[in-house]
Length: 410
Image 1: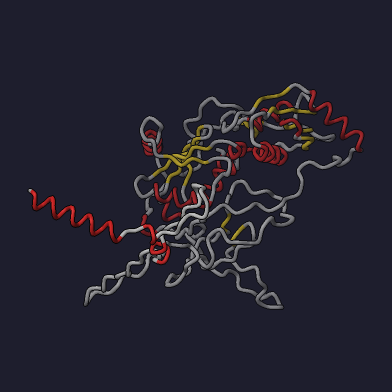
Image 2: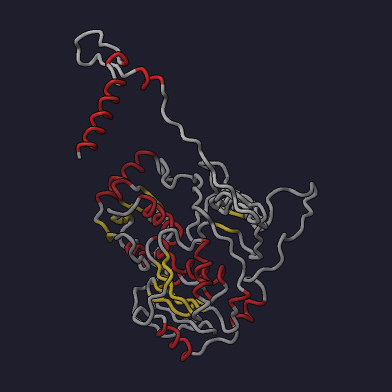
């Protein structure tokens, strides 16, 4: 033990003799913050270890760096081509009748750059290019051949008309208690990507239930027409906002048309104002007085958000037999919703829009309008077979006769 203690003392004595205060800089003043590090510490910079890279194993290729997928990268991909004969739009039911005045942004195609062989005009992708190909105007009748929907093959796909028993079986299988599969049709109406969803449902079942809510339910006749026209199916049942769409007896999922998807919702163009400063045929004073009277008129009905407005046209039609002004309370609805409802009422009733102030729709029947002569239909619950005859009709709010197409009436 004495030998070990002697060696420790010798080592400590040797270390203390080498470390002296001469190697440190003396402080310039007695301030405690004036201490400086030793010179040998300042002279040596931070330790830099050499970076060693592991060499790649022999005989194996290095992986390329990861590149996230992008819709802008079209290298090695072909341009999509669809033989559908109608113009591609974001919505097929909620389209204003007036022509747009301009655009809010450049005409970027919602299908993505270079993904579709159709030119985007700002609100649609037409089947034929809008550019003039010849000065004489002798252009081809169509750029694309006859499509899946409007050709004679549609009748071949639908096959023989369904019997009453077959319709009843399909209706029972697609009720809410039987299945939860359905396509929701909201304020945007029948959108382009919804066509692809309907064909996906037709892979597993011969019919699909479509639940309509909001603005499109004001004109259910247009919704039925657009569904049959754009999908090639057949509406076999309608109850309020619920529609059952049948695919056809000879439908084959492998032969479904190519439907390119929209990657984003395009900006709507700028359309003319619905409310004019002065109503045609009236002066400014008469127009202001009409608006004041309309806002003081008792509300005919109150509309709820995402409700079914199938009987709204009939209700307004009946109210115009007694009063020349009708007010509809729309508190809680988005501005775009009750403006679209007003535009639909203007065309379906018909009537004149007065104002949208204070979340109200005020409409005027006009000077020379005659609503007493309009006939009405007692049923609007439809269950159609192949012969276009009304079946399973039930008691339902009365709708004007003009509200239905001639082919749907017996």
